[in-house]
Image 1: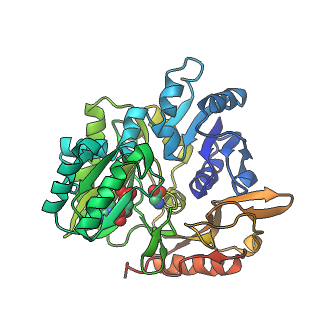
Image 2: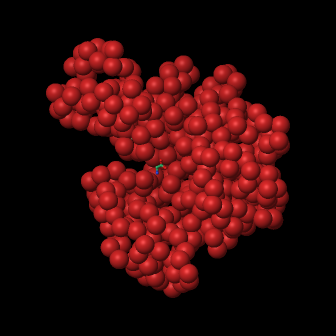
Length: 423
Ligand code: AMP
Ligand code: GLY
C-alpha cells in the first residue's frame, strides 16, 4: 500500500525509516519531510494543517494509510475531516479524533478526564479572567513552587514554574490577559510534584492497547537540566529505573483507566498516547497527555520495535490490536540531538552539514535539514538526532557521542550529559 506521513522532524524521519522497512509499504510519501526523509521516501510540498491539500495529495497518490506526526493537525481535527468524508473515509488515518486530541489540546480537559477516571495526577483548579481573584486566592493557599499551565497549545512554552508568590500572581494575570493568546484564556494551576520524569507510550485502537517501550527525554538546553526548555535534546529507552512492579502500577493505575475512559466516552481514538509521568515516592503521576509520539522519544522507541510497524498500525485501524504480538528489541537505544547554536532562542539556518557519511555506528535521523543541490543544509533548531543501540544505555550513548563528534556544521551544539541522572 502507499503510505503518507505528515510532518517534517526527526520523529517523522524515524516513522519513515520503520515504515520503509515493511514489506507492506509500496510507495512512501512524507509531507513536507526533510533531507533525511527524501532519501527513503518522496517528499510532498504540502502543509499538514491544510487538510484540503492533504486530501488532494492522498487521493492523487492513492494513499491507503496516513500517519499524523505532530499534534497541530490532530487538535485541529484532521482525523474527523477524513473519517467524515465519503471520498476519504477508507483511508486509514492514524491519530485520535478532535475529541480525543483535546487530551493534549486542553490541559483543563485532560485534568477533568483524569479526575473522572481516578487517574493519579497533581491536584489542580482552573481559572479564567473572570475568576482571576479566585486564582490569586488559590495560589495563596498553595505551597511554592507554583505551576501555571496555559490551557491550550503554546508550542511547548505554556508551563511556568515560579518560586515567588507575588510573581506567580502577576504571571497568572499576564497569562489570563493574553500572554499566550487564546491558549491562555484559561489557566490550570496545579500542585508541584517533586520527582523524576519518564514517558510511557501507548498505541490504542480505542479499546485494546499495546504499551510501547518507555523513554526519558532531556528537555533543557543546558547540561545538568539547566536553561530554557527545548523540544528535546536527547532520549534514552528503556528507562532504567522502571522495573516490572513500577510498570505494573503504571498499567493498572494509568494506562487501563485512560483507555477505558476513552471507551466510556465513546471517543474515536486510533493512535498513540504519550503519557508524561513523574515518579514521586515510588508512585506514578500523570504530568500530561500528548496525543502523538514524542520527538526525540520516537527516535529511541520505534527502532526498538521489532514487529512490523505497518501491521501494527493496520491492526490499530481495524480495532484488532489484540490480534498482534508486540516484539521489542531488548537492547537499549539512545539518541543525541545536535542543534543550531542559539536554539531554542534565535539561530541561523542554511549551514552546510558534513560528516554524515562517516557515521556508521548510529542511525542518522534528520530533524531540521533540507537539500540544496548535492548539499545538506541546516533548516531548523534541532538538526540531526543520532540514535544508537547498546547492551545498556551507557554503551549506546558512547556510540551516539562518537557519531556526534563526526558531524559538523557551523555553531553546532549538543548536550554531553544525556542520561546523567540515571546512574
Ligand atoms: P508540560 O508542558 O505539561 O509537559 O510541562 C512541562 C514541564 O513542566 C514538564 O515536563 C515538567 O518538567 C514540568 N511540570 C509540569 N507540571 C508539573 C508539576 N505539576 N509538578 C512538577 N513539574 C511539572
Ligand atoms: N519531547 C517532548 C515532546 O515531544 O513533546
